[in-house]
Image: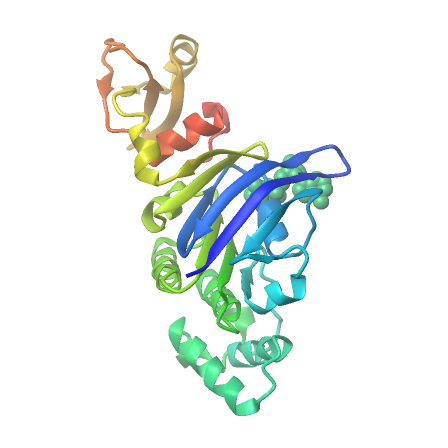
Length: 296
Ligand SMILES: Nc1ncnc2c1ncn2[C@@H]1O[C@H](COP(=O)(O)OP(=O)(O)OP(=O)(O)O)[C@@H](O)[C@H]1O
């Protein structure tokens, strides 16, 4: 059982951006979702956990090990899939994993071969092992990314926005793979995609402007909005008027129509119907994005 404890973590970049503002989180085994809009500070936190950058202050421990002071030890038990996983142009999936296993210190050839075969099977790429990674689809590349993150039986696995750009089938396959991995390690999934967290995570945090604005289970945070979310289908050109009269938390196109969700303690009448809140309502409420800036 692994436990990651982050305390009072701060990072201010030289341009004055307070990317990590007093972050406190305790994360146990399993899938932990870190949800936030672009620029919230997720990658800054992920890179700090992966020992790729140092914070200005604060501490991070994994099972009591101070990972800021013991970076080499942490790297031995860390798997990291960065936002941009650079793949090596002309080499095959098998060669790439073999090469990365050498870099991780697995020097025995036979041990490496067994491990690479095991990983290729695990991510369902064994039959493609002799093909160049360059020609893989986005989902296949991400599965190679997860395979390399699993080298060395890591206790903590960090995946930064892994499903952006994947088609629905690839996304499902990737989700199943992550859920499987989550049984034996701390897996932190950083994403701006609400569905990734809803489908995979039992514990989560929402980050906005460098701060943790919620930490807990998806169910608990959704229940905070119980009875407060109302929905109405309106014409696109009415949006501005509704925006000035109601607290709109989301607007999206459904079947060519504009559907808005608003927050209200009282029945707003005027054709609104109460709906069950969902994680997307929570996300937009907690991060206070204006509807115009939502990426739906
Ligand atoms: N090296 C840097 N120097 C200066 N500012 C930076 C640096 N890296 C990130 N920032 C700024 O810090 C803030 C947080 O960025 P970060 O990349 O951590 O956010 P994010 O939530 O991961 O967003 P995204 O999904 O777009 O990567 C942003 O305002 C960003 O512009």
